[in-house]
Image (cartoon, rainbow, N blue to C red):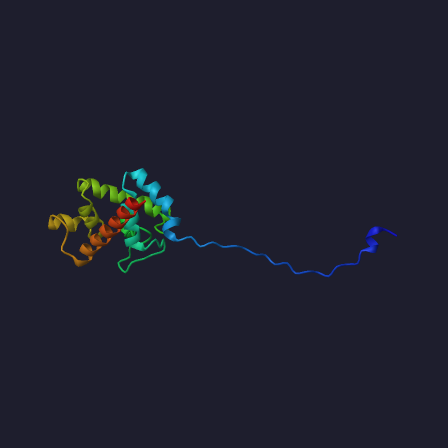
Length: 159
């Protein structure tokens, strides 16, 4: 008698697939992208990180009530001007946003306060007021980013 005939047929046993999913906080997930774009465009990565946190809280699908989109909250017209095909693509959005921020820093001779005011209220408003426009939202925006930058600086000093 063949050996296989001696083994009884086993019943079918259901199989279960187990996957492990890890949650990664978005600020950690996008940190390499922030670093790369900041280095490429010569902008302080702490400033880029603070802008992303303030603009979208690191949500690549964020859309403001004004229509700004993605991590760096680019308006559709600006996205088009910067050649962005998909404003919700994190890489495209961050690289374009940092390029724009670099241009604003250059336009304002490195003055971060004026560059941030331009990023938030538009360069026209900064030119019209010859400085930070007296808009509560823009003033708060600058305070928020400066607060984040101060925390980043203190954290780096504590290390």
